[in-house]
Length: 116
Image (cartoon, rainbow, N blue to C red; front, side, top):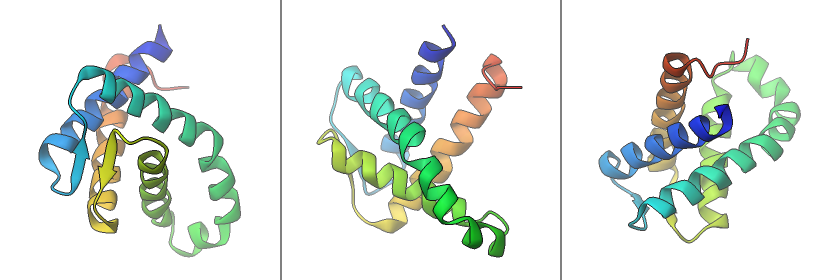
């Protein structure tokens, strides 16, 4: 149940980004948001830990701010893996990743999905 709720939170975050961030386009339909959420979760699960490990010196040097770049890269990789999502550059990717991070953090905390 937690996994389904998490996918729905990510799909909602992607919907908010598509509605309000210029330069981020999502193919219409609920299934598009669910597919993007699934791919984004898989990319975050498989690729993000490796990138965080490889960029550990930069993370220390920037006091964690480099995570914004890593999150934008994960969103860009998601866009490369599916034709349902398109991002028109690094600016929209950074803004979108910040919004997705904030919405998923809030959703996780409100729904009690946060790991202890």
